[in-house]
Image 1 (tube, helix red, strand yellow):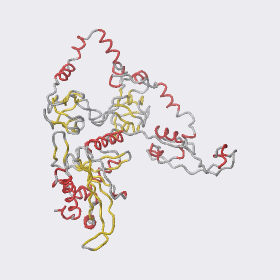
Image 2 (tube, helix red, strand yellow):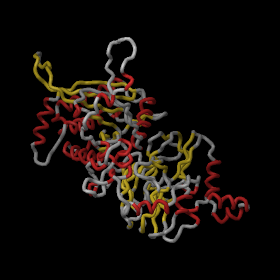
Image 3 (tube, helix red, strand yellow):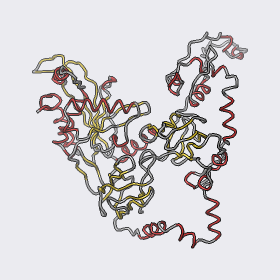
Image 4 (cartoon, one colour):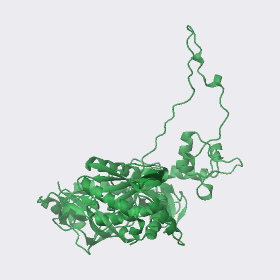
Length: 553
């Protein structure tokens, strides 16, 4: 069935986009994950990938032309499929609004009036409704990680309102309006679909009760009535005059600064905020402070206070059985957008690609000596992982079939080498990409990996920095893991798992000596990589790692 692809909203302020380059033409076969086009937004030019597979049947916006968000960009379907109906829909939706109104009946106009969002009909002067932005091309909902302002604060254009967690990263969301923050529609830690009511900004003192309670996301279905601002604002104001509870004050009577999410988690866990040290701005307690809090051990209750009163046997003597006192404790952690996407994509990879694994042991003595020599150069720092990445890049150039992508009707051989490096972060795993890795020196690889990994852990990576990989390297050696198998990061055809370097007895020249070895495991997609091809790649990789000088040639 044919599917309409519309102009995406690739930045929070984007209202229209320009097709900078089409990377596909009508008639081409499209696989999920293929880059369809480069879209120029108001902030940058970004690659736009397909989330469907089939044949490109129609291009709606030629190169160099601009169109509003949600305009018909392309149609993908089965080869030869009739798409005249979809094209007629496009023509119908592009008619002028005035023409539509003249053709509509009075009943239709009444219905349209009934479904129109109150926020679009009559906003008080200066009031702006801020909605949940779509900060990445695959984002359907977002989570407010942190509010950096509270109701009543003055907002200037360019101020950071909140940190929004998308399916790919946590990004700062800035205000493009100025005024007073009158209403917050999504609390910290809560998720909501794109275009949901995020906040309302306007002149101080403006009554926005009707807007907050009747807002309809995108002018579609009505949101359940929200708590009126008039009831919420006094609560905020009263907090400054009412006596704080013991939970919210320190031993010297000062108010404790804590995020709403941190307060909720602390309340659920029975943790007193005045016992927690905040790591946020001005000592503000945030979610991680509560999650990492370890209470000071209290005096244990006496056995008589905890043991059940019915424990004393009233029947014939029986063997004494020790029953420890305690409580059943479970904790439910809401899945982040990143965790949902990881689960979805890895499950798709494992259940669609026939995986098999090849393992090889590599001698690391020469690599260890070479690394000491390389790092003796001022301002140079190279890790063993950097050496593995460089060796992979060079081996991929010699074995391009490993650097491939499966399509239903063909295999795409990538002659450029973009290696993704798996980086563990608090909420899961991200894979920043080193573009044209084969053209990078060891020191350039080392510097790039440190930069990308650091920004990944701080959730500052751009979506474009996690796209376009042709091969992936995952290393758990620093955790003492000697050998493991990974799930392929599609659309790649292979992923290399790197274990720890182990000192052990080895045989050299017929004698048992102490040596250092490392296990490498290559997970392959059997649709694209035969066993012999994968084995030959590992042999070449082993040669480069065991003879580092060959990588410098």
